Image (cartoon, rainbow, N blue to C red):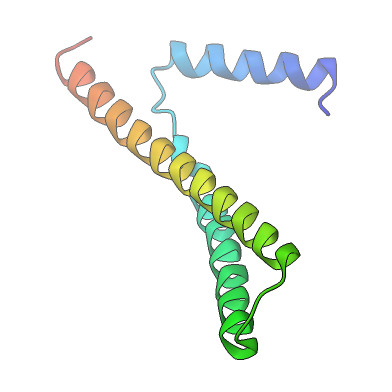
Length: 101
């Protein structure tokens, strides 16, 4: 949780970045998105191996598989959205800046 002072500093930073026409980098967290997706991929791979090795599944395994696949899809969609948004905004920013916006 952030303090009032931290919130004020964040707001000041955003205002300053707008005034200075600083290019905002949405992909600073791309590494974390990829790390999170990789974690889900590894978990799903382990689940697949266990199911194939055992040749059967229990209901609780199927429930966990369903939840993990749903979470993985949600995270993957979010990461793709953030990446797409960043690229779109960066292109628009560069285009506007080159037109003396």
